[in-house]
Image (cartoon, rainbow, N blue to C red; front, side, top):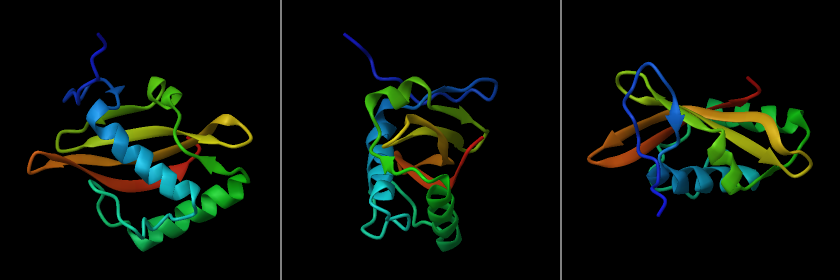
Amino acid sequence: MSMEPLAVKDEESAYPIAGSWRPIFREVVKAFAEDDFELSQGVVGVAPVDPSIASQNRAFVRNYDELLVELPEDTWATSCAQWMGQHWEVLVDLYTEGEGASDLVLTGHMNVLNGKPQFTVGLIYVP
């Protein structure tokens, strides 16, 4: 029996993305793959996206010149979260149509509000 990873509060090390958070990231990246960087339909567990962040992410992905695709299961082997004292910093590896695993990452913050995960979208970039 496999256990889903849990969110770990450790300021010294990064850990795999918590299993309970993964559906949130799948929905966010699915919207991005459809060019909805504003998350105009909303995603449960995601804070409203800052318009300047949405604009920067759209421009960066277009300049990258590859089409984003939905997250495959493989992304969880390389994506991570690290506790920063008041929230988790996350790095989610993104995939594209032409490359598969790309150099792009989605960044952001994950908090827990009223017992539920709440993600704030950060920038997409090549680290």
